[in-house]
Each structure stands twice: as C-alpha cells, then as structure tokens.
Image (cartoon, rainbow, N blue to C red):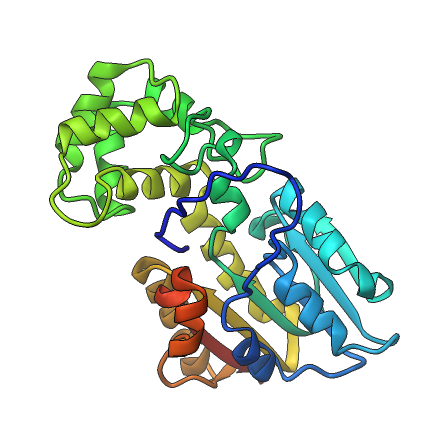
Amino acid sequence: MPQDHPESRKTEPAPFARHFPVMLAESLEYLAIKPDGRYLDCTAGLGGHTAAIAALLDRGGRLIANDRDAQSLEMARRNAADFADRIEFQQASFSELAESNLDGLIADLGVSRFQLTDPQRGFSFQAEGPADMRMDQTRGVTAAELLNHSAEKAIADWLYQLGEERRARKIAGAIVRARPIRSTLHLAGVVERAAPRTGPLHPATRTFMALRMVVNREQEELDALLNAAPRMVKPGGRIVIISFMSLEDRKVKESFRELKRTGRALILTKKPLTPSEQEVRENPPSRSAKLRAVEIV
C-alpha cells in the first residue's frame, strides 16, 4: 500500500489517463502466462495488470478480475474492455475467493490512486470528506464509527501496531477527547495538533493508514489469501504478490518460506524484486513496492 497521499484532488469517476500498474513487466514475467491458461487477478484495481494479462491470452484462456471495491471494478471493466471476451469480473474480498485449478494468481496490495484522491471515499487527509475508508462501501463500519465507539486503548493499539505510530497513545487520547469525529479534515486536524509535524511525513499519515487497515481487516484478509492461494493454484502454477509495507511483505515472505519448507512450492524470488529507477521516476508511489513469487509443486 503506497504511503504517499497524492496532492491531486480530482474526483471524477473516470479512469485516470496515466495509470501505472506497479512492476507490470516483472509481474508478467513471473506469472509466465500461458495463452490458454486460467488466471486470477485478486486486486483488479483500475485494470492495469488485468488488461496486460488478458492481452496475452487467446480465446481459450480465462482471467478472473476480482476486487472488493465496486467502483474500482467498474473502472477495470472499462479499461480492459478490449479483452472482455476473456475476462470474468467479480466483487469479493480475499476471504471469499474460492477459485481452483488456476495457472496463476496475482495480488497487488496497494491502494489505488482513485481511492486516495476521491474525497468521498475518506482515505486521504488532503480534502474534506466523510471518514469512511471502506473499500466495499456496501458493508462494514466506517473509520468514523470505529473511532467514535472504540476504547482509547484499542485505538492506540491500532495506530502503534499497524501504523507503527510512536505517538499512538497521545493521538488516541486526542481522538477520544475530540469525539465525535466528523470528517477526514477534522480527524487530520486532531492528529496534527496532538502530534505536530517533525519531518516530511504529514502527522496524520500513519493514523490514516492504520485505520484503513482496521476498517478493511487487511491483515486478516491477507492471511486468508496466503492460506488459500496454494490450494487455488495447480502444480506448475505461479503466485505473485506485490506489497508496499514491511508488515505485509513479512507475512508474504514467511508464508512462502513455509510453502518451501513443506515442499509445496519453489521460491522464484530469493530476494524481493523492487521497481526500477525509471519506474520510480515515472510513478513515485511505486518506490516502496516489493514483489515475491513462488511456483506451486
């Protein structure tokens, strides 16, 4: 998940003209696409990886493009329209995936630019909007609801454990005193007053990141994916996962190592791949990305 919060405040529900699927060439290389294969893009997002994979399939191949965010899924559908005859779109969280006999699976754990820059989604502190942060807005509780009804200790634990926020207790106390939290800018202001800026990172960055992870149960969902993926992919098939945080990358690394230890997979990336200097120049939020891949045996 990129920790950058883009300055752009565009909100139009149209595909971004310059959408950069992270480490696209590396992803395709490690998936080793077979034209007649069956693949799952667990995080279709705006459709960058989806369209590129589908372009390598013939009419005998099939790609399942999945996302838990209905708006992102619709953009992926439009952006990959040229290959609609070989793509099946579905909305589901990782824990709801039940595919089998796949030749490959990819998950890009980053948050899309669209989600970060639409104020109505509540992911960013750059513009006024509801403190929502749900990737699937049809269910679950919002960040505001969590903050307004949770114990101070629970809030502090989330900020410290998931956001690695050293000033978690001070921020949690300020949030409780400021309740009810009304909006993204209200929350950002509360955090900034409690923990003033000490460096280039905005004081609310880690708080917003942690809350988004809690709202969407991201750690639990990633655990579910890592547990299910080896059963969904058939022998000889590949699993490719791109992460943006050390917490996520550590989970992926440990899961892949366990698969190797138990003889269920071969590790294809001894060390995680990172974006090229050119990619980072063209798409700065990609700089924290790490790609790991295994082959099921």
